[in-house]
Every structure is written in C-alpha cells, then in structure tokens.
Amino acid sequence: MSPSERLEACLHLLLAEVGAGEAARRYVDSLHRAYVVSPPDDDAVHTFAALERLAVQRVERWLTALRDEGALVTADLEQQARFLVSLVNGLALERALPGARARHTYELSTLKIAVSSVVMTEGTSSP
Image (cartoon, rainbow, N blue to C red; front, side, top):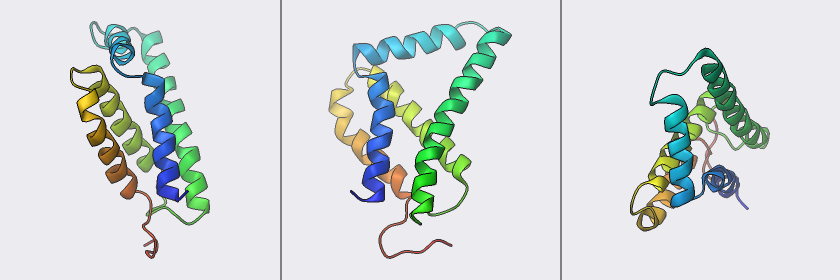
C-alpha cells in the first residue's frame, strides 16, 4: 500500500468512529448540545480542548511514520494534522446531513485531494 493509501485508510478510521446516517446525526447532535447550544463551562472547554489535542496527536503519529519514510511534502506535522482533522470534522458533519450516501464518492475524492496535499507523489522530493 502506498503512503497516500495508508493515510487515507487511517482517516477513514476516524470517520468510521463517527458512523453514518443516524449514528453520525447522534454524534453531531451530542457535539452541538455539549459545545454550541449554550456557552460551555470551563470543564467542557477543557474537555473539548483535550479531545481535540488527542485527535491531532493521533494524526501527527500517522504523519510521523510517513515523514520517517520521506513521504511528506513538508515537515510541519501539527499544521498538517490540524488540516486533516478539520477536513474529517467537515466530512463527519456531512455524514449527518440528508443525502450522505449519495456523497460517498465525493467523500473519497475529498480525502484523496487532502492526502495529496501532504503526501508527496512518487518521483517528487521534499522542498
């Protein structure tokens, strides 16, 4: 499996945790109730920040493996990880919206485009 394919598979793992359809709606609803409906208290803010940090660190670990293989475009792992986590968050929201199944092909294309922005294509070298 190529580095791009491996990273796409890892990002699919994050999306699998959200689920699709009703499961994705419950996920988005729980985030909305906990952090959007009303101003979160300090504990909720700290909890959210910790969860966000864990997600970014998880993706950073995947990117570290690719960097060690010489497969990344740049060396700013945190920036790349935050970009990919933001992308996954957006796709998770889309999974909760009506017509999510119809957008499945677009989801795969979106992941490929995002991964291509951080993983070098064969025959290129890092700046």
